[in-house]
Amino acid sequence: MDFAAPPPVIEALQERVGMGVFGYCTAPASLTEGVVEAMLRSYGWHVQPEWIVYLPGAVVGLNVLSRALMAEGEEVLCLTPVYPPFMTAPEVSGRVARQVPLVLDKVARRWSIDFDALEAAITPRTRMLFLCHPHNPISRVWREDELRQLAALCQRHNLFIGSDELHCDLILDPQLRHVPTAMLGEEIAQRTITLMAPSKTYNLAGLGTTLVIAADAEVRQKIRAAAAYRASSVNALGYVACDAAYRRGEPWRQALLSYLRSNRDLLVSFIDENLPGVSLDAPIEATFLAWLNVASLQLDKPVDFFESHGVGLMDGQPFGAPRGHYVRLNFAVPRALLLEALARIQTALKGGGIH
Image 1 (tube, rainbow, N blue to C red):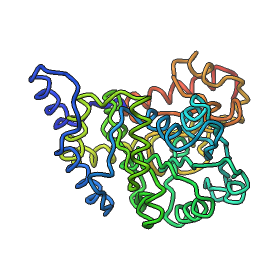
Image 2 (image 1 turned 180 degrees about the vertical axis):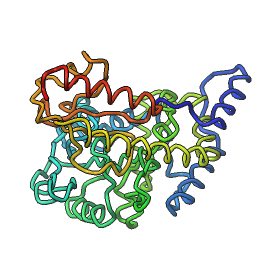
Image 3 (image 1 turned 90 degrees about the horizontal axis):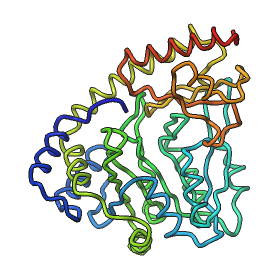
């Protein structure tokens, strides 16, 4: 995001910097206590302190899960389009990422999971499902009935569930709530490994602190072993920021959600009124990311086109989308900057002779 972190986080970091010592460290017990309290307060999720493993980043987490819970040549299922490391993390460790496309109902304006296709994609070498929840980039909040259907499928085929829930505190639709996958029942909790972090919600990604929550002791041991081989420890400032965010960041988060909702509404109305050829396939239910359909513009390289007019977007192809069909826009910026970006896109469309 383009916002300063919460003042309590900045104050805690300044106090820690004042100590002047920045050696290796382990997670303080107070942080784990704060995480446990936050999970109970936010979701009614009774996380035990020993379930928590700390890693220096969510992408590190995807890599560690791939190595810890799958052998070379074994497979993980990914629902696409999805955040690119879901597919690249397994590949760098010699594992296989199998893509199963999500389905868009254009009439209902709703992305959904094709459960028949997902089950058909399972082979004897499939070991895990990577779930993005809420989903990046389509900004979808998975409902409890969908999660239960996914969990039942994973139970039938004895699959682990790697549930990336980093955007869980950024639900923009007030009618919706986040349900941690691991809360669906004891058996599901034993096969689910949850990734959470303050990074997206509080703009702390550069401090590299991710929570891996796993109820199964053997799974945790495998994760720690893989992390010892593949990852460094979390840094001292990351622990401090994480603790302050979960303990004292809630008022700031509520203000953030209000601002993001207004930005989202502005974005939606501007697209509808001023950007012919650009559309949103479905409502933005969560996150600060908009998945823009630009297929009708027939641009071979839409990112290059918009960059040439002063707007930086992300290409949809690495997410598993067809070439030239989608771009991703980050609207977690000051409103004036969002308006400027949208005006430049409008000018690009007019100046490019597209419409």
